[in-house]
Amino acid sequence: MNLQEILDEIAEKYPHGLSNDSVIRKINNVQNELFRTAFRITTMFQYDVEEGIFSYPLPCMKSNVIDVLVGDQEYLYQDVKKSANTPFYYFTETSEIGIYPTPDRDIEGGMVIFYNREAAQLSASDTLAVPELDSDFHQLLVYGTLVQIAENFQDVAMVNNYASRYNGLIKEFQRVDDETPDYPVIEDVMGVW
Image (cartoon, rainbow, N blue to C red; front, top):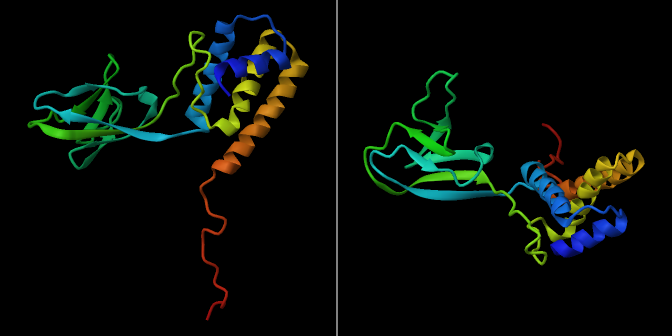
């Protein structure tokens, strides 16, 4: 479904009178939550490391950073409240990632940041845009948004109704997305000697 179809589906299920901007803001909130919790896609970004440069722009929000490699070495996250690990990375107040020790040479493609990808934000200016969430589960955006709209109108019965449907879809999504094989261990059919 594209954004307009999602907006239409929401309006059909719960006529509300809210502006498209308000509903799209709620859709984006649901989509962001799903990408943060259930629909995690790991990606990477690579920087050329430059001698004497210790900070680089973050390609994502700092909460989405998973791992940082500089050269062939993994850097650990360092908070100012912890004892020092060397080498380490940290976050600056200007949404950059800092690395210590400061590089003493240029390394082409020398820093790789692994992170959880963030969803592209939907907007009223492009209602033909298709959300990045798996197309089989666009109803998650519908029902997650309906929960928020019903909350706005303090419609407890409909909040419970939509939340139940949303939670059911989350469980179905997690079952489909589970990468664990049915039989992760080879069973010893011969018994123990």
